Length: 439
Image (tube, rainbow, N blue to C red; front, side, top):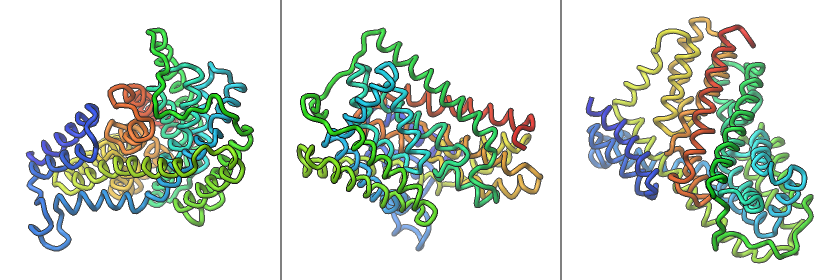
């Protein structure tokens, strides 16, 4: 009982501290300490046998493991965004998009840009880095409150594209190993749900932005913003080509290199931006430095939350919660969705929710004769809902590390489009599968 209080209390503490703007490098370990103390988890490795769970080892294992896996992508993604920004390529593309869509469709242009890159296999974190400079320019030209930029980036990245049939994102691929399905599992229902999430999410986001504008909110420039208004800009094509290089690189090398394909794709994007727009650089050295610092801050924030998840998974209450979630009676689709959603919320990770839940529920549901295609798609969609609570790594990185906003100002809109919209989409998917569509 005390362990459960510690785990739930630690999660609440982490969310509260995050919403109050406490640095995650402080909030993460502090919340993990709360979980460990109430759960009776030893604090140091010297107090336990070799390989046994303890606060320091589990926290730093999760922290360092995430950095080991993702730092090259974070670094190149941040540098790519900065060189696109410094050369004016992002500004040029944004002006071209404004010309095509009009300022009234500035938000739509951002969502589409993120969706194309995400469905192209570019890491969710990298998409935020890459599209942010363009989003900032579009919001500035359209005079929209910049606190909604994280929501626009998230809507195009972690909702209808991340968990859809055919998506190369890992949230769509993890179930394959356990259910022997394909990345196109349940594609009929997936299309319907994806269209719903895209249309409804965009409508809701625009409604929130318009409400804020009607109350007098406008774009507020900052000293750190790039000042490109009075300078010559490269042709929009030279800004689009690097994005296409990243997209093509991720497609070409994804099957052979997995996530490492992003290293080649992003490096190709950086080199292409340099070669096509070198005469437009204002300060290449500063762009590289700023990108590096931004990557360190962003991945540090994310790793701090991943470390918390490493501690939470080690306490007895976590297994109790997993057992309860995976033994829910009734429809396997509902049970699987609840199990994955709750575990993803506890760990702040969509992929984490799948990896923990699937080994436990997949064999049981397969023995029951559940349609694996339907289960695959339901689990994929459900993983992208409660994972986006305030402590989620992508949410923290995008709001604080990339956009420089506070959770208090920006999370309301982010939570609406990344938690509530996917939950409604999940409900629609379960209903359609239950009616026999796509089965």
